[in-house]
Amino acid sequence: MAEHRSDSRFSGPEVDEHWMVNRRRALKWLIRAGYGAFALAFALPALALRALSQQQTEVASGDALVYASNAGGGTAGQPVMADDLAVGDGIQAFPEGKSDNQANLIQVVRLAQGDGAEGLVAYSAICTHLGCVVYSDLNQDGHIACPCHNSQFDPTANADVTGGPADRALPSIAVSVTDNGIISVAGQFSGPVGPQ
Ligand code: FES
Image (cartoon, rainbow, N blue to C red; front, side, top):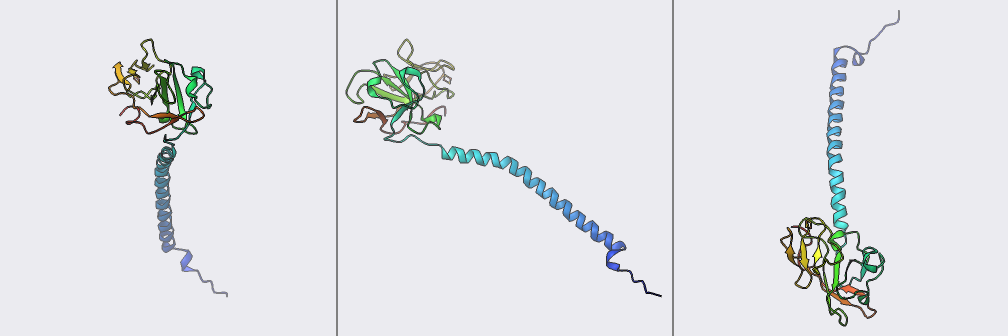
């Protein structure tokens, strides 16, 4: 008669125990993987946002200004010529190639006729109250006004606040005019842009 030999590795209480240990390990691994995926789901958008904000361009001296929109007689993306602006005109422009960053938006106002940059002033177009974009056209008092809560800034006096809830002037920025008549940036904003 053939001898029947059972294999003790694959039966009996030891097998059950072995199977249970493996099952526990697998469960632990699944739970850890779940926690990892959960943490990653939160971390990835934050990291992507951080990477995006780090990639944003910043205004720099020498940047030519281009119209931000078709308002004010300009064409979006076209260079802003000093001769385009009559006394009392206000327009909004971005440094060329840097419209990805709203904080680069610049309000240019002609206060008087003059050669080159004479008679021109430029400020951040971001309201210092809560960050709305100010109107490009000056109001009836010749001031820069914000559509959100009607803060007003005097372009003849360093954009000091003349009304509304803003408590800080719009940061100024120096401009110059190139040989071919394009207004360009000649410095940095005098202070932080927008609400602080
Ligand atoms: S955001 Fe400009 S007045 Fe409030």
